[in-house]
Image (cartoon, rainbow over all chains, first blue to last red; front, side, top):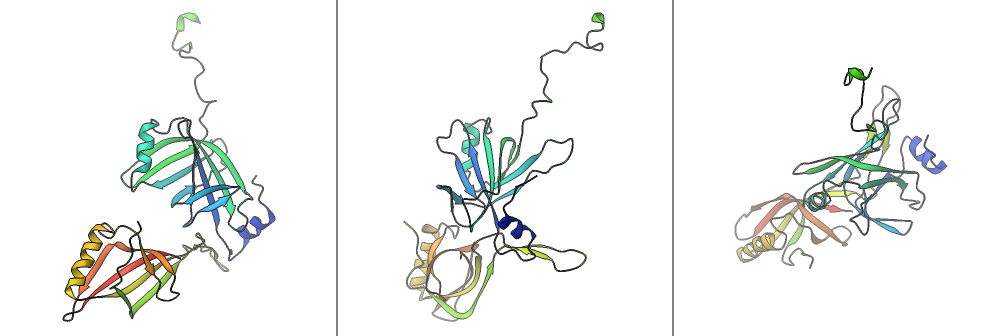
Length: 157
Length: 116
């Protein structure tokens, strides 16, 4: 359940909303001294003393479907190839964390939605970089290298 | 250093048109009024412009500026908005311009985009 402020709820429910919801994106990585901070707007935004540079990107916010790990999809344009260099250097952005925040520009310090997730499954083309932002499925991972089951080791049973 | 539209270039009133775009999201439903919301805080304004460049010497100088200063039309340059006289960053959409001349004076038909 998302806890939006009354102002944000009014904006969400309005037939004609008076301002856009902006998505702030913060990418953190052990190799980055300062996180990458961008906002999907045409100009920069200062939120809680941090500057987010205006840059176009698409984001699909995480859903809430039963028996499925929630994930968001992020798509950034790759014209200029600045990201490609960092992705190669960081071996595909391994161990990168991504923080998504939703704000209204009229009150940029009030964060309406704040989620931090892992950055995974990067796909790079000439024009875009697409990534899945979600949680690594730790519970679904195998705990041991070899599992002895009646099928793999019938002599034990 | 920021590129600037050369001083010998004038924006003509003839053929000038502009279209601000806030990228408004609209949801059509079966009934009642559709919901709408802007997706940008400032518009991206597309402007149809006719530029008067002048004589052939200016035309050749403009071609050189287009090639070296704004790299084939891909980069932004400073442009004075003919309506509010504010300096804005503009660029040629798709890096495309169209030269024409009725005689000794050269004109450019182009589409510019600016933020705000």
